[in-house]
Image 1 (cartoon, rainbow, N blue to C red):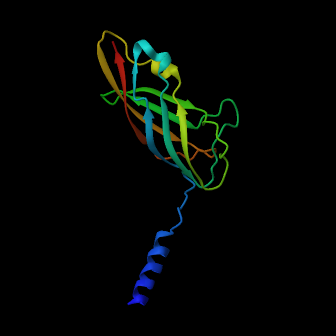
Image 2 (cartoon, helix red, strand yellow; image 1 turned 135 degrees about the horizontal axis):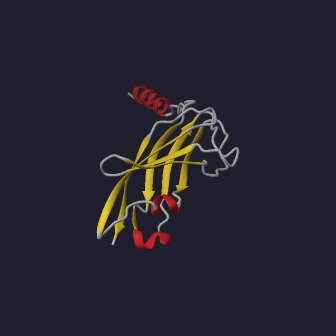
Image 3 (tube, rainbow, N blue to C red; image 1 turned 30 degrees about the horizontal axis):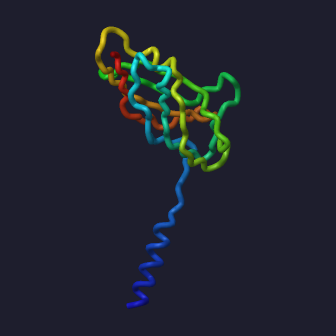
Length: 155
């Protein structure tokens, strides 16, 4: 009986120690978008942060020139129409260009993206959907991930 338990424990341990397999094509997954509500009259205090997880075998991300853009951020209205489709340099990170990159990334959404939303008469709340993806230096595009809802309140 002890031998069976020992064998089962060894098999369980070996099975739980699987290595993460990294792909040359990056994979992103949404973690959070906070705050997810901004008020039109108080945009200076609204600094939304998109947090996502990134895995890539090559880790070939980062800024190589001032015109490098490899983070793509899309906002859609409730009807699914694209309101904003913007490219940004990858956030500065000390871990870029490392093999088997497995990191959480924080990206501060620029104020001009939020300022260009909505308009018209309130009070109302417009709801936007977020999507994003990344491209590495070789031009390989990751999966496109949805990032939850963003509420824009017009008083």
